[in-house]
Structures are given as structure tokens and as C-alpha cells.
Image (cartoon, rainbow, N blue to C red; front, side):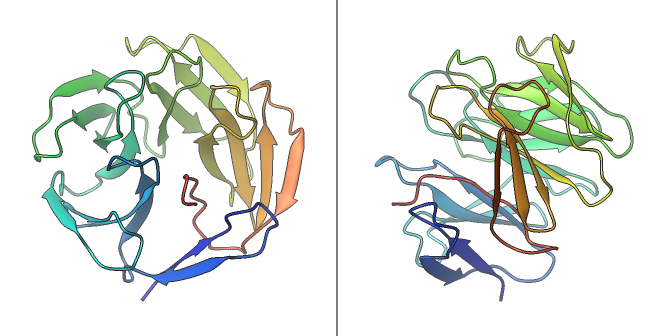
Length: 213
């Protein structure tokens, strides 16, 4: 089994180790149920296994996606104060399931170049997720979700870099993050300059962020 290593107090030491998932699964976290605490998710061949209690046991399974090359994401495309939605990125097309019923309620087009890494987060602070494509160290951000990048930031670019989006400083806007061999580089001003750097994890780990405690 894989394990989710949760650091509740940002001291860079795991406070909980929850076995959940298996080789080949895509690990995710998302705000999937009322209460304000993130759920653990493993995506497996088009099935979203959701652990809302964070005890390593699946509470909900939603079939969504499953085509070769599909990339799963979670983000709030429903508006301020809403729970996260399930998202499938497929070769430049974004499919959003807002009701957790396995049906796409919204679709967007953005990206599509081979090797693009899709990300979704509220970069401009309007309460709804924006579309983001990370491409070889360049972040293309579509805050209007109209298929056109209105922000472009250079940040990262090393072969082992893993990009992530989350609001580190609590200003209501998602910050840009690069996870590199266990080191987190965060650009809270979204200008490509890392003003927060810390160590947590190791090479090969998958960086995830959510409210767990």
C-alpha cells in the first residue's frame, strides 16, 4: 500500500501516516464533504475512491474518466464556498463533474501540448478555480476559463520538478509551488520568485495539500 503522510502543524514532520492506495493509483486530496476537512482520494482506472474520514477506507466510489492518458484533478469550479469538483483533463479538454455522479457538467479547452501538466486553483481570488498549464517551467494561467492565458509565469523547469497550487499565505489566492526532491519552493506573489522554501518528503513523493486537522 501507499501512504498519505500528513503534517498538520507545518513542522515538516508527519503527524499521521494513513495507508491508502496501491501502485499505479493517482493520489489526490479534495474538499469533498461538509465539515471543512479534506478527503483522501485515489484515482484508479477511471474510479475515484474517496475516503472522507481519512481512515484509509473508501466511503464513496465515483466512476469518471478512465481513458488512456486521463489526468484527474480536484478543484472548486462551482463558486465561492462550494465543495470541490472532480476534474478529468484529457489532451487539452477539461471535464468537470460538479455533482459527483460521474457526469461532466462543464467542459473547457486549455492546453493540449504533449507533456503539459494541468493544475487547477483559485489564482485570482474570485472563489472559483482557474485553469493552469505547467509546461517546462512556464505556468500558463487562464483566470477567465476561456482558453486563453492571461497570466504567464516562469517558475521551475528542472526535469524532476513537480508543480502544485495552493494558498500558502492565506490571502485567498493560490500560490505557485515547485516540489523538487523533497524541497518545496513557493512563490506567494506568483511572480516566479520562491519566497518560501522548506524541506518535507523525498524524491519520488507526490506533493498534496489540504485542510486535514
